[in-house]
Image 1 (spheres, rainbow, N blue to C red):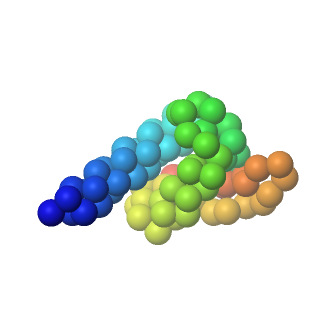
Image 2 (image 1 turned 30 degrees about the horizontal axis):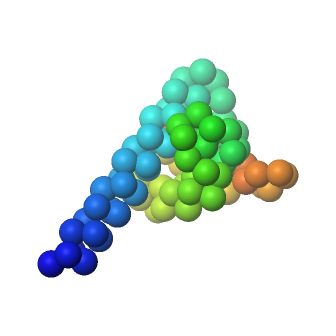
Image 3 (image 1 turned 60 degrees about the vertical axis):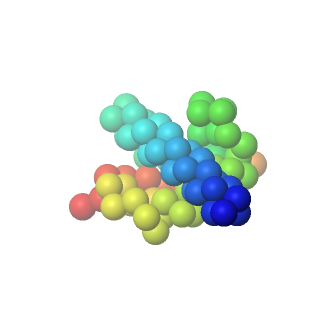
Amino acid sequence: MQQTTIDSDREQVARDQRDKIVSHLKEGIKAGKRYFKSKYIGRAIGLSPKEVGGRMAQLMQLCDELRIIKYSYSGSTTWLVTVAE
């Protein structure tokens, strides 16, 4: 019973983090941005670059609203993000 609660709490945290990232990306796209670095996303929403990278990898598969591509690495992972067609 307790493990189920812990797993449920972890999944809720993951969903909340993904939602924050998607909101941040949508705001950036509205402002004309297409390239986003994990470290700057993390700074803006209070996550580590590693957490952002893990959630972005999930969002590549889960998010139907955005097209997310791991673009390059230079000091931090850079993501190319556009609105999905």
